[in-house]
Image (cartoon, rainbow, N blue to C red; front, side, top):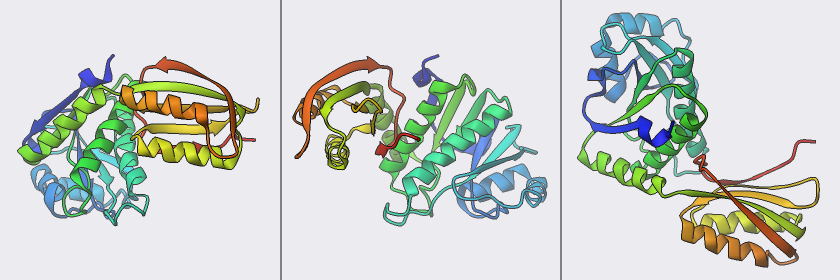
Length: 266
């Protein structure tokens, strides 16, 4: 099933969602707080707090579930988003983990539909544009490999946030994935480093990794013109490298977040 067809974006009150599960942007104590967290606890009733006291808290990026009690949703999945500290404290990975782990928790509960708030975009200060991209990419990637949940709804606080989500989703629909195999004298550290830097310049996501046969394997996702520029650049390589030839294949996108250097396990 096309993951895009399983995503909806709405403006409204997540506590009124009739999805099987709603996600709570909680703090590490899981004992309630302000914003969405406080609203969900208020709507669910005191039984939710009593149950959350038995869960032993939750680490940032992880997720734990509880009954929904007085909510329309049968389940609440609590996840703790990162506090924005400028982007250098692993915030992107932690936010991605919130969405992935919440969706996997929903799968374990066999729920068919789930609703998300904008995790970390309130008091935790995560920039809305970056948060929307991470939320949608992480969700699309998880849905690509899993049949449930069948529906994911993103509840936006206001029309401005919804517009950001709508624009981001439209951009993601245009993403293509290219798989490159680069042959020649290309396994130096600098080649992978320069490849990562070039991918960042072109707003591509994916990874680059050495292969046992002496080649370098690379997957990149982005807009078609940027992938073409990347393909042309790969033929030139980096200082000290000598590219013989580059092969390219096309596959469906899996919506990577960021571009990383990976290493073969020994």
